[in-house]
Image (cartoon, rainbow, N blue to C red; front, side):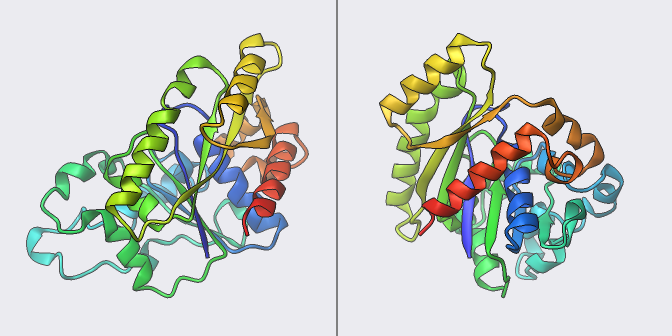
Length: 270
């Protein structure tokens, strides 16, 4: 089972879209069994794979917030929630693709669990104590390194960093690398490595995009994937259907770029 966290300290870089499309292609076209875990309180990955009405029915009883113990009283924390109860199967119209949805309450995760021992390892313990059977777990992380992404990194084998090749999205990359290094020193069981940085929302009309891609490749702060993801409106529109663009617009250029990226990811993983 390979676990990959998708993270960038800057929001709006195509992180969620990358998680959803890569997961869909792995499941639909490579016959991999894939679990998406939405750790971002914005719930964008969740609502890209299930409808708002479906999410409304389960949001207070069966989400990642329950897995992490947010909805427990202090007296009931020993009654551990079963992670399998939060899994929604065959989302986005794809049989091999499952989801653990997010919750807006994750915004307050650090405050709610401030007194909980080993709070950075709650997700790891849940997975270790289960018999989940997946080829890949892909985790959509919020744009920070607070408790939610810490839980993700502890269990991850790799990190993929989506980056729009502009000035601001690239500023936080050295900080991200340094924080992950410090994190690994604090948690010796954490073996996560950077699989690569992928350029997203690339627009050939902007010279700054071409310039930044050249500069970031030269700096080698994080190794870069060869595949780039160009701006594509069809990929954005698919969210309205609560399905991946791989299902709704399977022949669009954006989906083809993600197909190439998935092939590159599979080549890079030993």
